Amino acid sequence: MYAQFFGTFLLSHNVVTKDQLLSALGKKSSQHMKLGTLAIMKGYMTANEVDNVIISQTHNDCRFGDLAVREGYLTQEQVDELVKTQYPDFLLLGQTLVDEGYITNTQLETLIVDYESENELTDLDYSNEKQDNLDRILANFFHTTDVAADEYNASYMRLLFNDLTRFIGDDFTPLCFNPCKEYPVNYCVSQTIHGDLSAKVYLDMPETTCISFASRYVNEEFTEFDEYVQASLEDFLNLHNGLYNVNISNTLGKELTLEAPEVVSDELIELSSSSYLLQVMYPFGVVNFIFELKK
Image 1 (cartoon, rainbow, N blue to C red):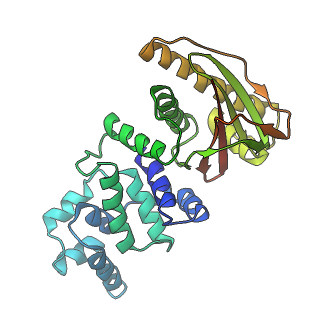
Image 2: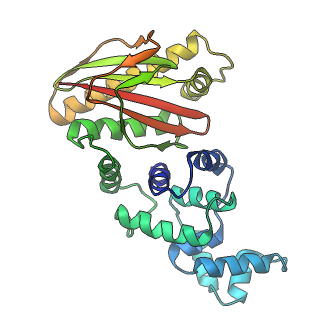
Image 3: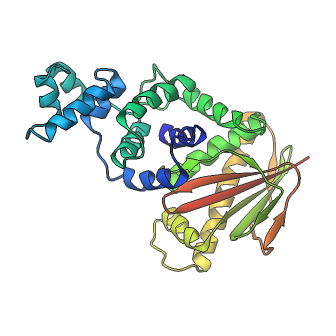
């Protein structure tokens, strides 16, 4: 899940725009990891050295690794190691941004260090996504807003990002929470949670985005906005909130109950003062979650 929050990191530091990030997310899956990018991540080469080899490749019909060894930047042993390196998914997103011309290798070199430092990922074994590292990233995500990172909220968001990854796809970037007092509806379904945590959760997106979201969710290609697409959104929200209730019962011993999902017919939702909007960017569109916390 590191790639998703790397996008959030880039946006929060004004490195790229939302449109640039969306473009890169859409193209990332078709990219392959380059040896030069891996060399930067491992600290074997600087960004300037990688750029020098890339420039040399324009005059030589030679692979990057062979040329880097010939010019003394890498040893053959290092090349062999890099070929087998397990790399974090966020690195491929960064490389795609470089390939699209949105950032340079020099910027990427600095961003890797800053992102790992901010989230204490420097010594991470990238072959596994360790829970404590993910929890630190999530804590930093909450730090950008005044939403309390208590066990209820942290558990909800951790599960939400996992469920989006599992059922919709991992090519998303969550934006920061924003207070929300009213919200203009596209197509919206909602569900109310009762118990020790009392809240109402809204899932909203334009109809075209609904079609893509539902297609991914049921693994079937929908072409029009119909009752099957609508039912898919309700089912996702109900499934996620149901899993959340089970988690809260198992981990905290608290019992929560759910009302059935319902379609929001209002064109504008008037919300309480303790309401927040979370936008999740996918290549096919932006998915909006609104959380209305009730005392």
